[in-house]
Length: 214
Length: 286
Image 1 (cartoon, chains in turn red, blue):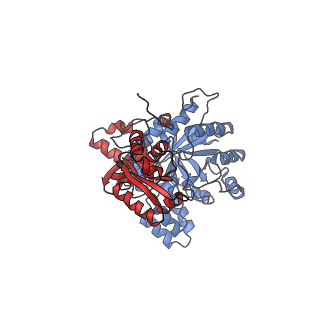
Image 2 (cartoon, each protein chain N blue to C red; image 1 turned 90 degrees about the horizontal axis):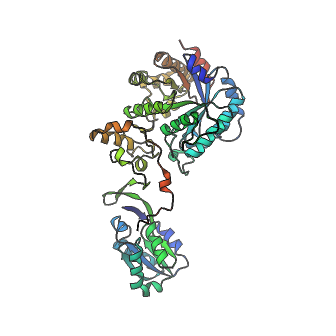
């Protein structure tokens, strides 16, 4: 899931400067799960914007603001209210903001910060697990990614700052390589840590990336 | 005698680290370099250590070379990608630099310059292989070089890390990749280091023991907080009680080195540029 957090409200207000009327869009998937862009958060920001003198022409949580087809359908059904707005505010990740902006040609602003791809441990506790490098090596590291979870993305074992299972960068952070060693022992695949790992092929991560399989 | 020859023939090799200045004024550090001439076999130039801006280690090594010292170029993986590192290494070789120490590099988080984007395109094992391949006439894309390099390659290890298992496996990878000498993290725990060496007896490389002479109680406090550096309480007590803590630090350093003869092939001084203590420590060695 794409993990997001709320952007500083003052920054949002500042980006909307000069626009008197706004349509607010939420995200029914990731941002709803993160409690950053669901029904409740959309209503909350609508109320705040009204207090600050903005006219809200409408608001809706779209199932997936990052899906051009769903945004297209939404823009047709909400056409009237959208047309009354000078700007759009999207409570979704960067992909959602850009998809909306591409489909509905109005000034479109983000209400969230897009953070990372991660797991939900419990409500409000999210952890980064994948950097989407396009060159997955989880088969060699016991299902724990050193690129995402080691601060230095090391592929051949821990640095000298790994101490008592923690990272030198932050003592509250687990050393990914400590976790990998322990997991590989558990899986009886410990010999895998002794193999030399080549540098990653970063040409797989040249931006912008796309999939055009059909 | 070059550093490489000393490693091979001397039996006990001595290196010292110098940090280039944060600025272009080399006056003070060049006096230190001059002092080291004839006293050590090689001089490491640190590479933006602790992720703090310093004059380039490559430029500093070239100047050390001009001054008649044998420089050891420290190359960290933090600030440059494989392309930039390779290019700098070719330049270093052309300037007469023959020794490289490959390190991962400290993360910038705790530095004054923490806003930068850390690179870590390759890790220290991959960097060692990259240098070894250049010595074999190939770059990291396995393309032929017009003129191979012939660097003596070094690596680092933290003998005090806990657990040590990961460090040893990584050290073995570094040796397999082409490292010939090891400069260790600073060591104060003699028994701990002996244990580490007993576990690494099969590793064929020259071990230079990392030594940072303690100069004050305040410094002892800072050093004891470095992850994986165990400064025994009895040594802190000695510094506290000493009339001349700098002298006590010199004595302690000499005692540590003397206790580890047979376990090491030399010593690497990391004195925070207080190089004047080096000959005093060396004069106390048995």
